[in-house]
Every structure is written in C-alpha cells, then in structure tokens.
Length: 163
Image 1: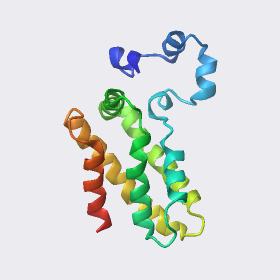
Image 2: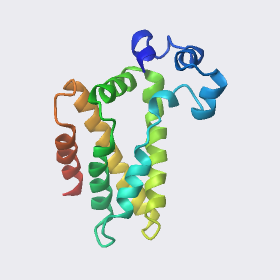
Image 3: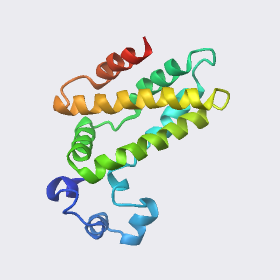
C-alpha cells in the first residue's frame, strides 16, 4: 500500500511490490491473481457470510444482509487510516474503480451461498442493494477524510433501503 500511495497504482510494478515484501513476483501472484487484487482483496466476505449464518432465519432477507454488513464493520482493519488510504486509492485509480463491480459480484455470490434456504434471486437483489449502499458510504466517508463515523454513516444509509 505504501508503494501505491507513494508512486501511484499505475506507477508501481508487481516486481517492486514483491521486492518490498521480500518475496518473488511469482509468490505475489500465487496469493494475488492480478495487481488489482493487491488493493481490492480483503477478508470481509467471510465475515459477512458468518454474520449472515447467525442471523434469525425469520428475519427478512434484506434486513439480514444489511445487519450483517453493518455488524461486520467491526472486523475491518483496525487502522482507519489504512482503510481510508485504500478507499481513496480505489476511488482515484480507474483500473481499480473498474474492478469494484467484480468485487461486489463476488461478495453477492458469497451472500447467496450463505443463505441457501432463501430464494437466490431475492438474495441477489437484496445483496446488490446493500452493496451499492456500502459502496456509496465508503465514497462519502472518504470525502469526509474519514472524519465521519463509518458505522453511523453505514447504519443511516442501510436504513434508507431497509425502510
């Protein structure tokens, strides 16, 4: 992340990232299939899936997904500066912004898999709505330089779609 912030995403090679991490480029590609994954990959999807599995089955699908996303914020990186830097890097790098849809689609699939007893189409629609909210919130949060309370902002935005 340091290299990307210093040199820009496009100005940093995978070889430079590998060198900074004291590994080979092949090792980097074993863990991250593309350069974009170095920034976009996170461990949030399993957190959402786990939270979903522990929600009451009788709760509406949209509410379960929204609550799981909101509760999962506790699992984000403990350093909000890192999250802010990552978010800004994504916002200001066309190649990364273009991949956000792929990430949201992958998260949607994780959510569908975590709710096997529900209508997959309903889950996809609800997940898409909540992920659009989450993306919008991250943009707004970055625009405040991370000064807004992320959890409060997410709760307020998710309430818009769950009303």
